[in-house]
Length: 233
Length: 205
Image 1 (tube, each protein chain N blue to C red):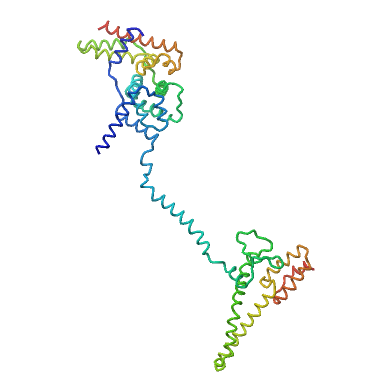
Image 2: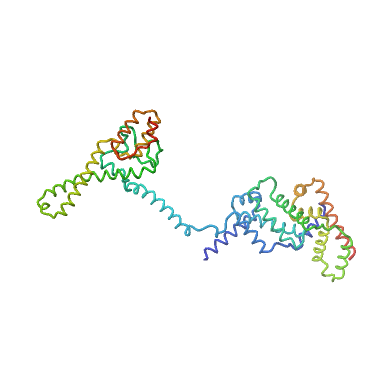
């Protein structure tokens, strides 16, 4: 650069030096700050966000504490209660290995397991057994009442009512005894037939015949499926 | 309240000290900004805003200067995540600016003005009609600005990169993507034309 060029250079730098407006400065610097530091509007201060955080934490803690407690306090299903009262464990395999009344919730459904349609009927029967067990006490009380002098002095209508009641208790007692004596008393006829069908399918015809005999014995009024008998023949 | 004002003053002084502190390079400031230091960008901006604005203004005119200026800085801001120190920050900044100006020319279908002795004669004629005392220093600057405006675009660009950005020939060549000799030649022609035009005006005054 010669002296003439330097003269032009100095002349150029002596001239006015226009600069960007303040508005432009603010816009660019604002954009630069927003790029690295989001505006306060998008960031909620802690004072505004802590209630939500505390609420979520409280819900989690309460859930963790209460769920095990509620699971413990949850009433046992009627089925389990009934079996405990009858003194039989339905979970334990019976003589034939049939575990017909084990609740199937969460378990793999096996061939031996009752069909969904038959389950309510079985449950009802088990509950009946539970009711039956309570009968002897009442029955004993009734019989003692029947022999008391007060009853003798009662009207004929009252006597008739007591007799009917006594008869019904006797019937229930006999049902209970039959159920206790038979290992499959708690099976419904339909379930029994399913079992027989399975035995036939497995080729255990002798066992199937024995089961049919038992079924006829316990449910004399039940009509066995003719197809089942045909298969057996 | 007074405490807050004091903190603000101290912060402004620290910024000013950073702007004045040449030991902190532009590249380090840009890297700081990439890491989230917004103040570093402000220092960079204060260092370069004037020269860059005039670099744009002399080439595009007042009408588009602010828009282009803002676009270029936004480009810098948006490039922060991919910024790497491959060249000086100034070279990178003016490279962005140059590309944006070329794009502006293309978009608006503009052609850079070329030297035209007739137009300069017209200027000198107009100046001669003004009183002598107004034709001194102030008008010399004005005449120089007119002469710069009349330079071919490549020469004008080289001249502004030299005078405004303070780049040497090597960096001018790097920024404009030409050889060292080509950059040197453009610069030499630019000064020569400016000198000739100013002499021409003085001779005809």
